[in-house]
Image (tube, rainbow, N blue to C red; front, side):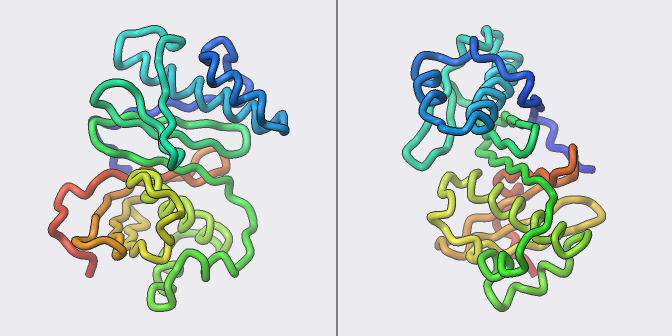
Length: 213
């Protein structure tokens, strides 16, 4: 498995979430969620993110301020970039010196129609290059493409159909081109399985001039 030497992550279970780490705005936002599970996910996510940032910036976790853009993307004070995801009983946060996006998706059956949302017709062959069963491939494809969307801070305002993937299943890496932009923006990804979920992170391609074949 390939890991970028300057990317750090931290995993947290929902049970490890610490309300005390939330600032007043975060507490107020948490109280707006009608679902207890959604509140636990929020607290676990903030706990993971603040604990990770604190370890690398020499401050107390409760002192870490997380900013939320209108797009929903997260940032912190200073030059480092962060991203956060949660699924089922887990939350994971990542920190890097470059833009980064992480996604985490529980592996469970998905409707085959999801492929039509994720892939343009000419790219459907990519799905069959992914490892696992049909449902596992669909979940992985979603995970990879959402990691790119989070890294570029566009979310689903950019259709995942505009993201072309080239996946090396054995190395658990991928490359992506977002064809909506001119010039196209390019990303490199690492992915894997953990706790019954696929995870993937995306960072800018080291060689942005290379094209997918």
